[in-house]
Image (tube, rainbow, N blue to C red; front, side):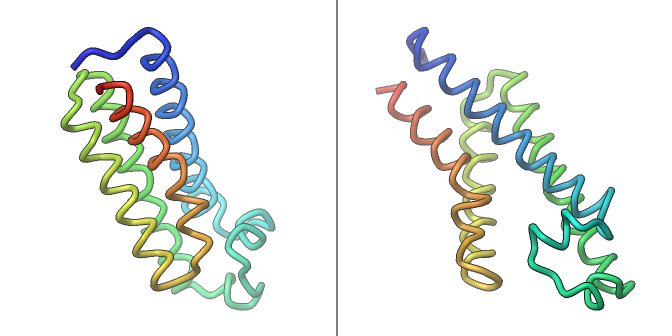
Length: 126
């Protein structure tokens, strides 16, 4: 697949932003799950946030987000369009599931950048 110079850099910028977003989610869920930032981002009650079970659930979820970011980095580094499309597809699917089961805003907060990245990648390939 060949992308024009403009599409190539736009895709790289969007993929980088997507990776940074998923790493950010990892940090707030796994590294600083008890922080005010985590509480604000996920609209958590302080008492609920302090519970060990919730801490473990957040940390577990954060690791999944980091794995998704790493997969996307590997796909770009290996220049595998298929792996990039699959990685973005999984990110979008996770955002859809989160929107259906937890909060509809997850679709936009976690799914927008992967969807934009995938859209620009496809448009650039046409």
